[in-house]
Length: 98
Image (cartoon, rainbow, N blue to C red; front, side, top):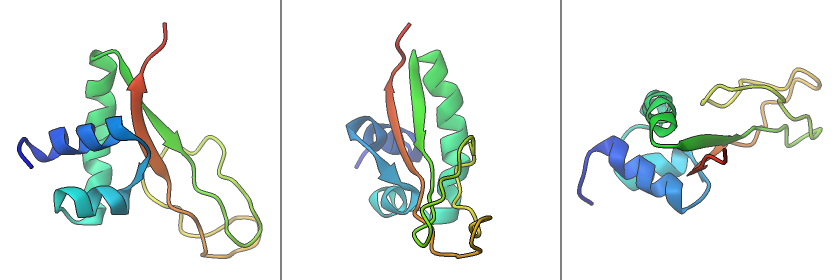
């Protein structure tokens, strides 16, 4: 792939939803670095007339969703049942509707 890491992530997110793990494998960077790139992509997407969509994590044990959470990393554990079995947040870039 050509382009910067952030450009590659941007292109991947334009294609559809992806987790930090998916993006890490696709562009060849550590998973923990993806959140940092997503923060910057969110700001640059606004300038392009796009928006970064976050599909929040949820608990796989009890189904608790994390409403209003806007972090790009996976939560540590569920506040309802204490389980650490949580889905990974998924991201996508789409055109912003006026």
